Length: 382
Ligand code: SF4
Image 1 (cartoon, rainbow, N blue to C red):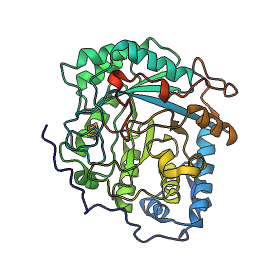
Image 2: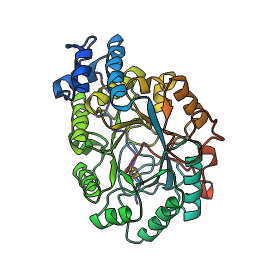
Image 3: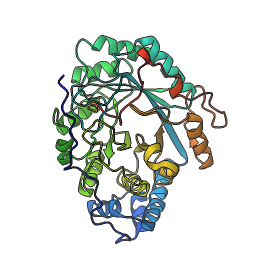
């Protein structure tokens, strides 16, 4: 694939249009409405996304009430393995794995079953309740499919953990094959609003993504779908994404916050500020009260010292270990954070399930890294 000039896209920037220092309605009243089965309106969500300063703390209080009502004190962690990394045919402007950009990553082809099994076991024994393989690319080719089935079979050898896959666009037959092979959930993010998606990706459409998610749901797979914030989208785009996800009703919603990657057209974007990110998490909790809301890419780099506040803002889940193209912190630090917050993590899995037991290692450092390649993800792409 011919590399593009990797030109920055100056048309895209993170602006703070019409911020509000105070909510134009009673936020506690809104949380009561949602707890009683009502829905936030688009206008209310728009105002919540615009709140800044002290008002964000009031918003988080309202979102935390909703989180506690629907989810209690339980949180979960999942872990991913970049089983096939880089050399991607798609031009997603945020992604280090796209062949269109020079980002300095070390690509690798699909890992074999033994490596996948080892990584699944390690994830389970070190605090993750779900584990997923992540392959770069638009979607699996026919040639790759036997290798993907090998990876799924390897994951399935490890019980006590939810088996997931991020493989890009799927056909109905592939979705059914995955379901029959024992995959419980597929991840396929909407990334942003339909309108803004065309500014970020031109090699496939937002509707292609919706189609894959619907196909997966039709064959009985659980779905995990969310987005990336801080890609120059407007508040209206954030509202659209939230309500599109509400309509699709995925089981899990990962929220990623752009950490711009050198060499991509979004490298120049200023990362969102921690309070803006917390306001986004809280508003998404109010839009999606029942979903498992996962703070994924950008948690450590963008929230910095405020990452524990993500759970107060309404998150119920996190990614543990490494991300796709950046390393995460030690999983023991994440689990300690959960204890310190007075929360508890999923103890239904086999091994490492006792919140009182110290996990043994840093998940990321023990991950297989074939060919010495960086075995990480990109902002939950695919
Ligand atoms: S997000 Fe996925 S489809 Fe897009 S360039 Fe990255 S790996 Fe390829």
